[in-house]
Length: 138
Image (cartoon, rainbow, N blue to C red; front, side, top):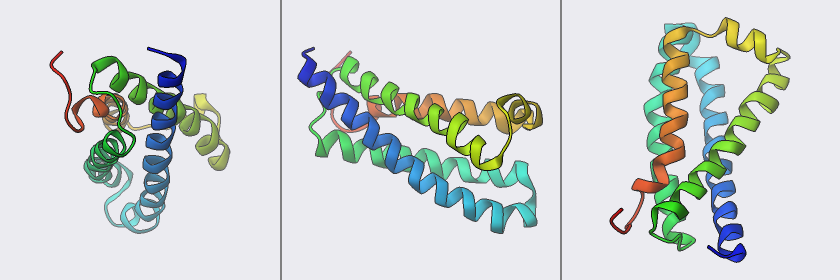
């Protein structure tokens, strides 16, 4: 893989993160304002996750096609891993800063069910480009 290809994949991963994060941020605001008062934090977060996974798939498929990401597994993994790195930076940096809490407080206050589902969804977010669009056999 050349440096040009690597930069292209990092750009694809950054766009993947940016689109999913931006829409997720809006959905999160709606979840907090509309759903949490009605059904509570746990169920509101669990209800949001399938929408975020669908968004991740559609976004990954769109970017894989639009940016002509190579069908080989390594290229798709680089794209997904790049998106994941930026997602973790945003989650543990920007979001916690907005909420004015430390990582320790954030982890201590999380519901164990939604925390497990959240980390599973992050893993699925990272590997979603593998399953998006046409790809070669591994």
